[in-house]
Length: 196
Image 1 (cartoon, rainbow, N blue to C red):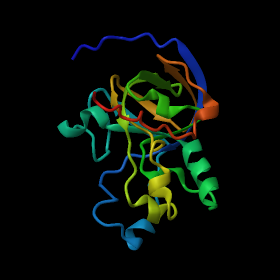
Image 2: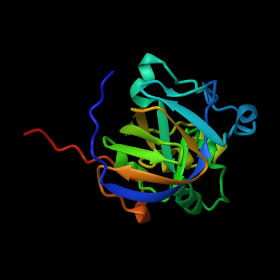
Image 3: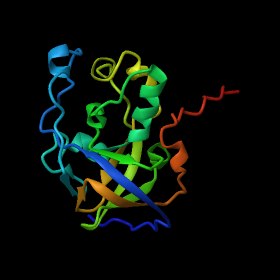
């Protein structure tokens, strides 16, 4: 498959603080305290394949998920929500996103091409629709987290190149300017305008 290479003029130094490749769907069905109490799987690196997803992840190479096979989240979203709910800090991977970043306004990447480079080559992604939270968030994070994560649950992405992502410093390049100070701010959809 041939992809058009889009220029990514905006450069940001970010940090990859969490990586996840889960072979099974953990938060399936009704929220269950036994499942919620299991330790969160984490990786020090993940391999991304163009148009397929994260190697070893449950959504990799599944046709229904090709446009959403990699999920990216700003850790600041979880930190701001924890402060709003008055709880302690949470494991950033409890939200079950593949890549958790610090220092990036992830919600602004909806519908935008961007890339991450952790020193092992650039991984290009197309930001897509929001990664909406599920009811499990009230159990694995805190009561109220399901509602509180709306608009800041991250973005679902289609991978456009092969590469490896690692924990630690990274460079994010995007087609649009980002504001790191807004990394944890919820992005609400525009209100629908009445049809005349």
